[in-house]
Image 1 (cartoon, rainbow, N blue to C red):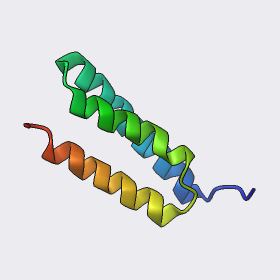
Image 2: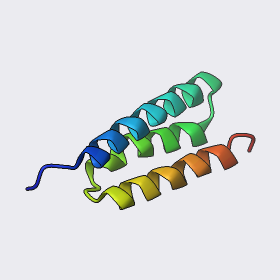
Image 3: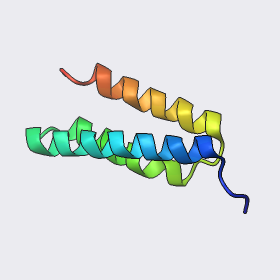
Length: 71
């Protein structure tokens, strides 16, 4: 197994922190959608090994979090 690139490590850290914040926000507000997206953002970097895929999925989940913020 190859070592991850710095972009993948940094992306995993960034999206993990955003996912943790989204999960805590959803838990505090008793809303399921931010909690689910937060868990997905914390978990998916463990399974993605390509940088562009990691950043694309992370951007999509952040966009989903933004769209579902009032719904």
